[in-house]
Length: 215
Image (tube, rainbow, N blue to C red; front, side):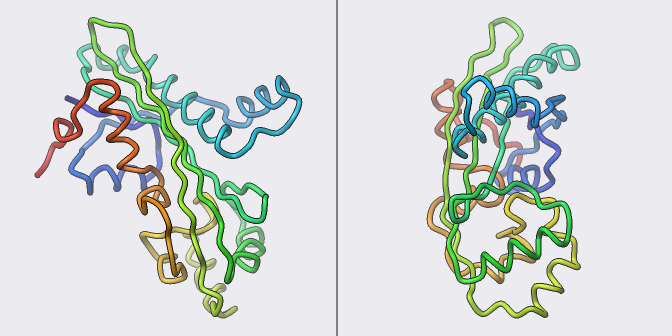
């Protein structure tokens, strides 16, 4: 039983490897901004964060599930797509991209608690049947230390780590020292909830341990 990760995220790849799974990887060809804009135009209002991350996770997984048989016609397994956003004080944040934006966010996050929303889409793909899908959203509450100094923030932002991750922080690398509490599946904050993926795989008739490629 094989796994294809519909993502270029190093954190998601490492998470699966740590869970005993060595996946194929295929970058989704999805314009996320256009997908979100189309959905919001149809609704006439911004999507709430749980709906938005699920929409994008489904778009990415569906794109890869559609293209995968062209490259691997004998693929028999699951395709995993995910998307994450961080909600703080009613505002939703993706990747900050610039040091200025990251700094502004961290100045508001010190001593507060926010919610990391993570959308999951899993497709069961096999050569002799149509693909089937299972989806879910996982959430984790993240509390940040109140005593983070300006010098520590300067050093963390200068490392470049927070610029390309949802919410401008990690829990499994340099940013972990600034987080005092996580309520929910900790892997959700890394990028995907492993317990959620196990449940979705089971819904599709796949036993999680059959996906292991290493003990």
